[in-house]
Length: 267
Image (tube, rainbow, N blue to C red; front, top):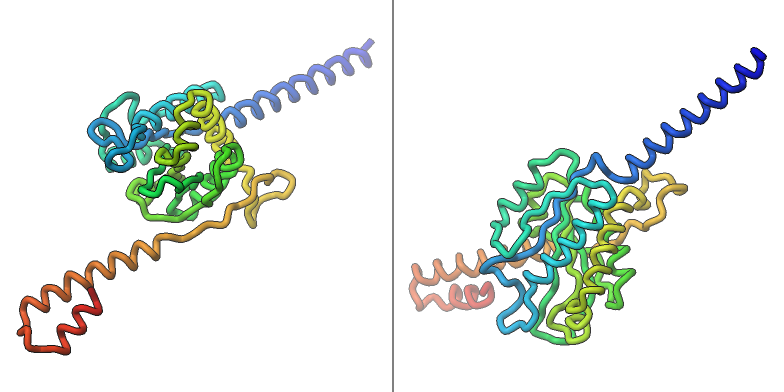
């Protein structure tokens, strides 16, 4: 009898520990301790895109953001939206919202536009190196699940990425000015698909394969990226040089041929 009682106690203890482990695992999987700040690009007077564009970017971003909110809420995440309707929210306010939460990540939803109607594809932006795993995971799922070319991951100093003090990405979910992609995006089922793929990337951000990750867990490759921050800096430098040369030209005599040649070259 005592032996049977001890065995029963042991079984109960094992079941209790297993239940606790399952509960802990479920809590971790749900991401209940992480706040996801979802940013629907543009809004209000800022329609997004380029002049004459048929499909409104601000409407598409808000729709995908709201769908993303529903998916992630079902996963147990705490969700904060930078905008819930058609209002304009300044960029500084968007990043301030993200920075006000501990253990948060920031995901900004956008669509691309171009004067060349053939431009197409998915691209994901980040700035801080700590945001690369998140960008890699989101891009892996969105680009992998969309019938569009993969334009890759890019590092760029967009304001909302540069000013964010939490992991932050901006995902461009296709070109509204491309007839084929515009037709896809105009379909509600496709926008739901985009939301689900972004959510998959958020859930999988800890499974990105890095130099410090475990190969048994890491299943998503760390994406190579194009660093466009240097290009932006170069453009700013050329603009400054141009302005400086124009000021010098206005101060100096037009008879100085060498200076005029130099100014034309710098401009």
